[in-house]
Amino acid sequence: MEELVRVAGRRWTIEECFEEAKGQVGLDQYEVRRWDGWYRHITLAMLAHAYLAVIRNQAAEQGEKGAATAPMRS
Image (cartoon, rainbow, N blue to C red; front, side, top):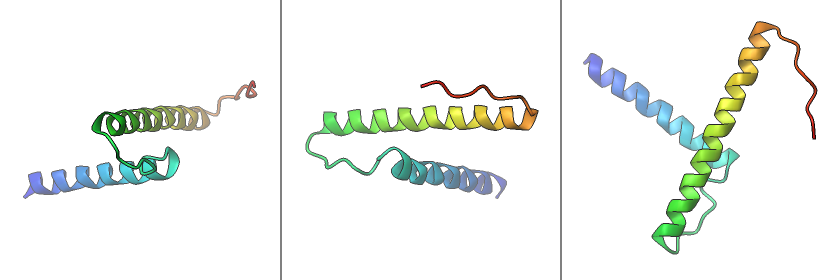
């Protein structure tokens, strides 16, 4: 029973990840014509989503530490 609960909890996390990716990086914006095009789109969208997650976590850690943040450069 514990194993089932653990697996169900992981599935929920994965579903949330895909929902975020659909809204933030356009995971659902591709109209499938060929497999290789779909694969490239999904790969780049998930890479962009992972990058945003890392940046979000770094910003949260800096905020928790109370460190002064440098101004953004353009």
